[in-house]
Image (cartoon, rainbow, N blue to C red):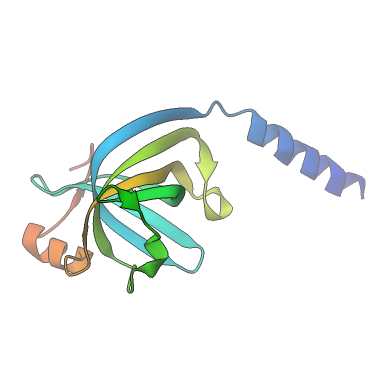
Length: 135
């Protein structure tokens, strides 16, 4: 029992020890993936075929699309959909399922949605997508 309590306390302290930063970001382009224990936005520089970052993704309760309130769940086949968005970016902590992501975005406004443009088509157009900072 003592070990369990010690572990819980250490986990709680560990969560508070991170310094979380919040930044407003605009015109992010990429693909949104949704599935079992996964909500991921892959920001991609399409001109240079570079994966900039992957972030745990949530949608603001006040989400807007074309200036009006929008419920993202009304879109069918949301897995692997192209989005251009404005969002709030959080870094400096672990996010998402099991803390697997180094950043989180909360999408506040969708500027563009294209359910016909998907990651596989992007790979065909680009050939190979490189990670930012790596060759």
